[in-house]
Amino acid sequence: MDTLPTAGQERRWRFTPGAAILLMIAASVAVIATARYTSPPASRNDQANLQQLAQQRLLRFDDLPDGAVAVIDVGSGQLVQRFEGEQGFLRGTLRAMARERKIQGVGRGEPFELLLHADGRLTLRDPSTGARIALESFGATNTGVFARLLR
Image (cartoon, rainbow, N blue to C red; front, side):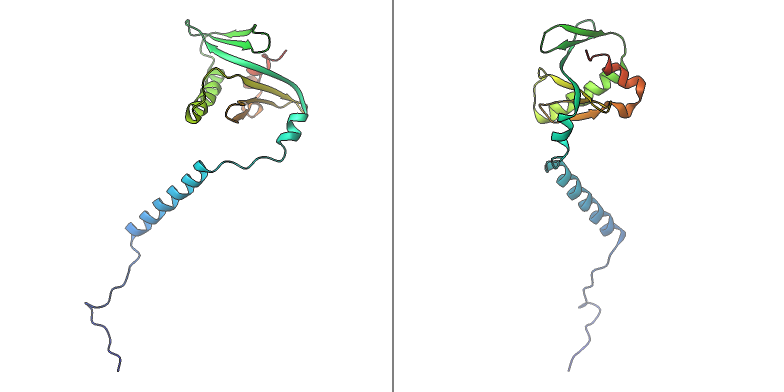
């Protein structure tokens, strides 16, 4: 004959708020780790987008001792433009790209690609890391800062 367990014998797991918090933390860490350590899927349109370029220019951005930023055309070695003063959007964009290079262990000397697409979109791409910034999404004024660097 079966006997019922006494209160001391029954071990029942209870879902407490603390357990819920721990479960959420573990799930968050798992999602972040998966996103961080898996490479993003290659876009099917990358090749098509490269074929529809109106213009492409390889540029190097150098910090000068006086605080200015010199933009150098990699092909000719000539100064394209010198930016002085705050230049918040330009510096912020370059900082984001430099951060990605630092994370991936890439040196500072590699050039960036400034891409003008046939449909008028403007993209700054880092061939050494694969990072890209769609400049037109920041408005016409900010896009104009980089558009001036095209021939």
